[in-house]
Image 1 (cartoon, rainbow, N blue to C red):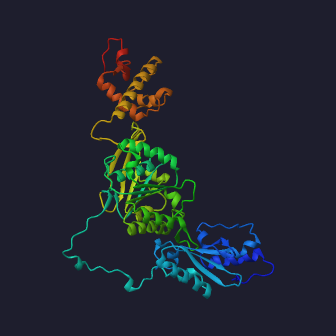
Image 2: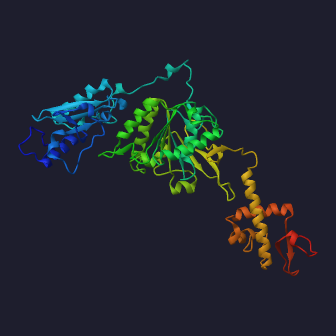
Image 3: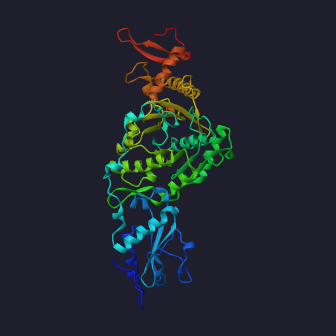
Length: 497
């Protein structure tokens, strides 16, 4: 490996960069330029987001080349994930190495400086310090004797929303684009901060942290205003308990595959852990999986590792994570809402699916939230609610839906209009399924206004029951046939069939 020794009379920038790249590989870090003041590094100005000119490096800046190393939890598991330690390694003009921690929990900074210094001295890559996976000693494995639980009270299971979103676990919420996954998550989070019931659900009263990778802050401002108006509250009443992290204009990946394909946390993951530590949310929303997961969604191992990383946050900080996702085409067609590998379904403890209720005459503003998987509660639970004025509102499924009634009346009006028109044209429409079946013919008419055959069939029966249309028989005695007419347009003396 190239060494960064005392400077030569003529500094070769290419050699210096090659040396820096070698050290970056060994120290599992990134190349940065350390700010200098009066010929010495100015640690007070050193930041984790230091940048360096990859293409045009001034020879005068070569002495400032350094290696920034962080994510020490992946190097030494004894360093906690939330320690936030970052070290900078640099070489002075005499070739002596220096390692300095620029941030992190003081309890672990010296330990991390020592880890880097020993790697430099030994020449061994830092990655080799990581303990082999899946090889714990017998003393490392927790063992629980069931007899020790005798007489102890059984702990209650904690829920963010009873039977839907368990605490200390990852819940997957999938749904096609445009149905309102983000709005639903936002509304549940705001209801939590206000300790309110919304769409018939009572979230745990607490805090919410929302990582938004799809929509910008202004859009959430508008949506939050609608939700708060619906809940009869103001922005001030959330009292600092709802915190949004808008990432629409940034790389939002929380984990990416390493050289060996294993999922590794990004710097954003570490920043997120710090935010969780700071705000102590009861609900952490990640919007969406496509933006925060940098692996291959059909690779089971990568999916399970990613969900495991998120679960570690849940367990460490006692919160629920709601991960929003888009279903695959097959998942939408089957109604399961599944996506990619089955590991997504198998790795989470609860999976919810947001879609439109089935049926041709369904209210387009109606939504159905289905429980597709629940390790701790009832499965196949369904909740219905409607979009109205920017928020979701509860509906009483035991009572007729006013919107559905409007759609029924519309279908009846169009049916009568088309039946009158087609009869004047001399077309015979049959009340029974056939080539001339009235609902079938009407669905194909330009004036059908998008109403489907099933809705026309239901309208036909209602119109017959009310007497607005009727069935008549025509033709010779040897070959009678039935057809539909508008009752008010029957001026003959024949009776209904």
